[in-house]
Image 1: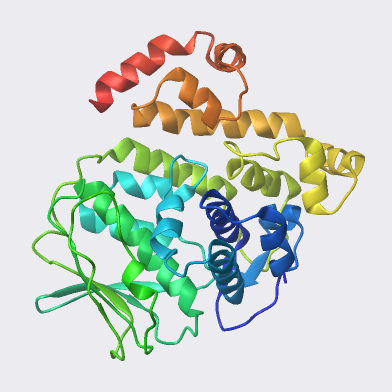
Image 2: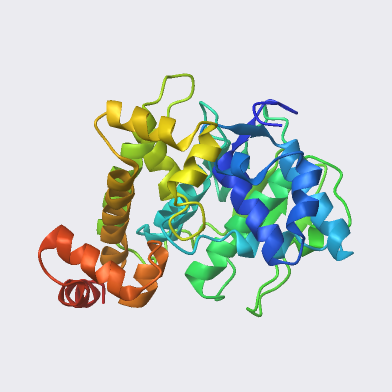
Length: 346
């Protein structure tokens, strides 16, 4: 299914892999999902690959059949909420205002396009994120994205006054849309309207400029710099070292960090991958260390996690291994540095 197109947009392998893992978390079976997609799991890890948005439909529909329920959109959206920096959209959570968070979260969803899939609009008293009219995306993709953004808004406001006024759709709707958003917070059910001129999320304009309690300019700046390091521009020949950095960044807190898994994903033998990296002046181990070091900086700047949690997020099986690595990077143990960053974040 890689590189195929159902419509005029595509989704990145990282987005599809997040959706795949979310479906597993809510109870779908891995073999069933992979068979429905017609893919092997390594293909979902390849940062070079794009998929038509029908792949999103396949995962959602197969999961609904597995669970015997169509009301899965909110659960999927909740599981796709970023929980760490291996998902680049996590950096969006640290914007100065809710407007900044929503705009950055929408932009961070990679759809392999040259123009944004959603545009921020303010018309009179209307404030909304509007779906590109020229994109013929599968309905499930629209719904999953809207559900993620709804969960982002509720997380930032901690379930306070609802920021999202309504979800509007150009299509005729269906029975599962009332499950677009439902959380542990006691907030009113999101109103959904169909046969509308535009597909969009409408926000209460008086609330979008509220300060974000999680704002952290240092995180936003550092995350942007790291993203620039591994961003892959479509249609260009990508150095294997940069491709490996991208691959490892998205998998630090998951599986697939070994040379064997990377070689399998890139469709080459381990010795071939090793030889090609050496020709570029790098090694797989050096790249992994660099990704861990760069991402460690983000977790320290975030200033909310313990050393043990950071070690796990960076793919270390033991805290002692992380401590040794950090000491080798900086010539000192991590505990004092983390304490200083936690104090600054507070």
